[in-house]
Image 1 (cartoon, helix red, strand yellow):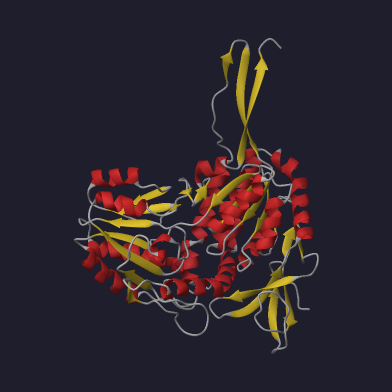
Image 2: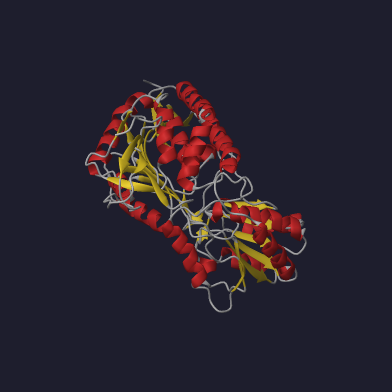
Length: 506
C-alpha cells in the first residue's frame, strides 16, 4: 500500500482493465489513488471493501478507485449526521456564518488542489475551472454565510384576542443530498452551503463517476466543522436509493435526470420526506429579427458549447425568426467550426470531453437517429480515439416533435429551428416537458417583457444566456423539478416553519 495523500486516499498498486466495478484482470501494474468515504470526521473504506473505478474522461483510463458504498455505510453516515444534528441546530447563526466564511477562505487557499482534482476527474480545462468555478463557489458560500443571519418572516402579532403568535424557522434535520457529474464541486456547494447555514447536517453523495473533488472538499470542511455535520459517501445509483429510502433524513435533495428525480420523489413519498429536485432542461433560445446576429451568435455559441453542453441550462435549442434564419445558421456554423475541444491543459480550448463513455454513446445516438429532414451543418462525431471528446455540432432542418428537439442531449450539440411570429415562438419554446431556463434576444423592450411573461420556465434571460448569481433563485417547473437553488429562496428550502402561540394572560 502507498502512503496516505492529502485528501483521504492512498496510492495503491493494482492490476486490471478499466472496469467500472473492481473485478480486475491482469494487466501492467499501475498506480491508482484510492478515495474514501468521509463519515463522522474520518476517512473510511466501504464496510464490505467494495470499490468502483474512476476514469479520467480525457484519456479514458482508470486513475483511482472509490468506495461502492452499501447499506452499512449509509447507516453509519446517517447515524453520524443524526448524532451531530442537535448541537449544530443549536449553534447561533453567527457561529454558522463564521464556519462558512472559514470554509470559503479555505477553498480559496486550496483552489489549485481542487482545480487539479476536478480537472482530472472531469477533463475540464484547467484555466476555465480556475476562473469560472472557484470564484462563484466561494461567493455562493459567503452568500449563504450571510443568509444564515437574515431569516425573514411575518412579524409577531395578536391575530386572536389575548394571544400573541410568532413564527419560527428551524432546520429540517438530516439532509440526504445527491450531486451530479457535470459540475461536481459547484453542485456540492449548492447542496451543502444552504443546508449547513440553516443548521442542518448533511450526507452528500457525489456522482459515481466524479467523486474526487467532493472527497477533497470533505477534508477541507472536516477541518472546520464539528464531526458528523458534513459526511460524504461514494457509490452508485443503489447507494443513492439507500440514502433516500433511509428513515433518518428529513429531506432528500438531488440534481440529476428526470428519471432519477421521479425515482427519488417516489421513494421519499413512502415516509413523506421533503424533496428538492433540480432535474433536466431543454432551454429555448428565442432570437428575433432585430438583434445583432453576429453578437448573438457569439454569445449563444459560448453558452451552448461551454462545459461540452453538459449543463441543464445550456443554450442548445435555438429558435430563430425565419427572416434571419439562414444568416444565423451560417454564422453559428462558422462559430462552431472555430470552437475547440481538447485536453485540460490546453488554454485554447473552450471545453473538454464528455463525462463518461455512456454519455458519449448517448450524444452519438442522438446524431445517428436524426430524421432524414435534419441536416448536420458541422461536427456530429467523436473527436479522436482517446477519451470522450465530441465535436461542436449544429443541426438544422428540425421539426418540433423530433427527438433531438424534445429530449435533453447534454452534449455540445445546438439545434436550430425557425419560427414565423411571436405566437409560434412561444408555442415552440414551451412545447417540451422541461421548464428550467430560457432566453429572449430582441431590442424591443415590450416584446421582451411579453415573452418573459409567456415563457414557462424558471429563468428567462434577455439578450444573454447562462449567467447566475448567488442572490437570485435557480430552479424550474414541470419535469425540471421543484425547489430553488441559490438565493434566500434556496436557503429557506432547508428550513421548516413553526407557529408558536402564547396566551397574554399566562
